[in-house]
Image (tube, rainbow, N blue to C red; front, side, top):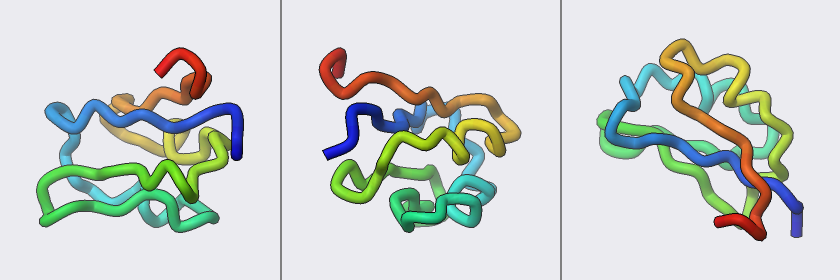
Amino acid sequence: MAKKLAVIETNRCVACGACENECPFGAVAVFGGCYAVVNPDKCVGCGKCAKICPACIIEVKERATL
């Protein structure tokens, strides 16, 4: 399992889908057109979603601190 994980502030998410489109592992999905969620089983913590997020609400964290 990856040591890092993307964490999304769902209450601030604008559901634009940029992170979902950018993730090469299919770990991010926009849920119900309301906010994005991360599948921790697929996320490798690469940070591509965080870099593309126009709202800057995705942070890559160490899994041990979650």
